[in-house]
Image 1: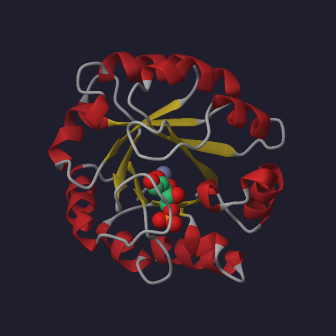
Image 2: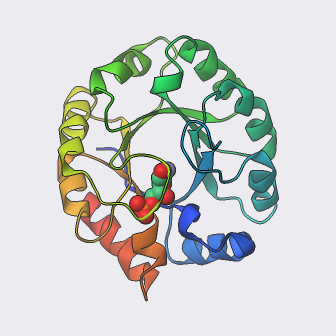
Length: 220
Ligand code: DX5
Ligand code: ZN
């Protein structure tokens, strides 16, 4: 079984204090920091880009799990590679024509390629990317419509996670959106091992307890 990775979504942090928020999450036991990059076009929200990743990289060696909610992911490969991103997860909906080139370029810049899919996208669309000669190393199953934190988890997405886990026993499968103490068991038993959690972690009086509860559920 793929090891558990708990990834607080920094979208729910205080962006004005990003470095200390990151340190706080790592001290609470986070494995990865999930960085939501949105272009105001693929999704109706605008967040951060390579300059912020570069600034944060100066303060931490942590794995920066970048989720690209952008229309032209290829344009972000070089700047994010230079900035020190660790994972580069692009959306399958905008990469049908060029995913092979994308994966190759991501890897050549020293990042780990992943593919994400929106709730309305069938799981079959990512299979070629997992099975290719130059495969992605993670599939991110969106469990809300991408764009904003704090939305309600969509349990019907667990069919996708189950189908993926059945086909690929050691693949990193990430879930993102609405994860927290009341939904983690559904995701973990379906087979997800990388857990993104924004509002449930940052909004908790004791985020460290939420992080350890999420981990326990995945590891059980
Ligand atoms: C949504 C983002 C998520 C978001 C999750 O488009 O991809 O990473 O920050 O936030 P919560 O955990 O609050 O749903
Ligand atoms: Zn995300």
